[in-house]
Structure formats: C-alpha cells, structure tokens
Length: 140
Picture 1 (cartoon, one colour):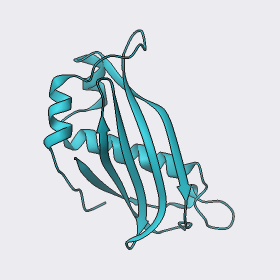
Picture 2 (cartoon, helix red, strand yellow):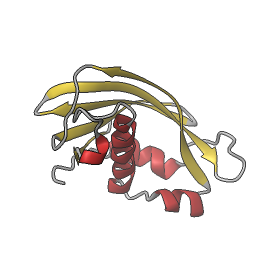
Picture 3 (cartoon, one colour):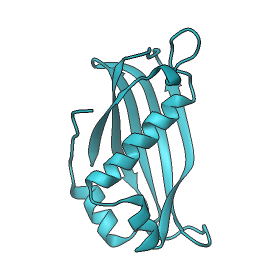
Picture 4 (cartoon, helix red, strand yellow):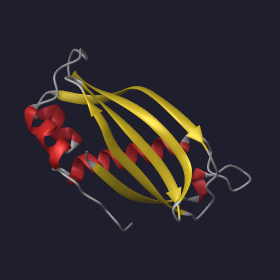
C-alpha cells in the first residue's frame, strides 16, 4: 500500500542534556511525517475538517526504541499504510538514520466527526488516494 518518507533534522531542542533525542519527540517526528503524507496526497488537515467534516485522531500506538538519534542527525521517517478499515487505518512507521533502524511503531488512526468526535467512515476520495498514491519526499 501507500508509503511515504519524510526527512527530519534533529535540533538541539529535540534532545536531552546528553544530546540524545528525548523519547517523546519521536512521536512528534512521526506526526510530522503523517501530516506531510496527507499533504502530499492533496489533503490539508484544515480541508479535512472544514470541507469533509472529519479529523484524524490517534487511537493507539506501540513503539519500539532500537537505537538513539542524536543532535543534528538527519532522519528518515517512513509511513506505510498496512491496513484500512471502514473508519480507521493502521500504519507502520519507522525512523532511520543512514538506513539504520532506530524506531519502529505501529499506529492506528481513526477518522472522527469534527464536531461530535464519533467515528465516521473514511471519505471515498481519501480512501482512494491512500490505496493508490505512492509518494516519496527526499529533501528537508
């Protein structure tokens, strides 16, 4: 299915006193990649909310920390759609540095009504793009 790679540079603010990326910041890096994945398919999150009346929320995630990232590293954050249900998607996300796996995560995102926050079906145009659009972004 759909795969996307987004580069992220590690800034000083992303690290702890030892120059290692603080564990919660990996979630931010993965969120940026998911946002850019949607944007590359033509879906701004404001458009999803304002035009389609849906927002995407994280239902659950599991993360495995393999190796640390450090200040000034350039990371590749990968999003791969692994499963699509009527109102949610499952994604595998990885973070690598020079091809070396640092982080591996399973993310479940749900589509909900922008007002009620109740689950809704994935709009057809989004479903179609997610299953057919293969994109890769390479530069910061």
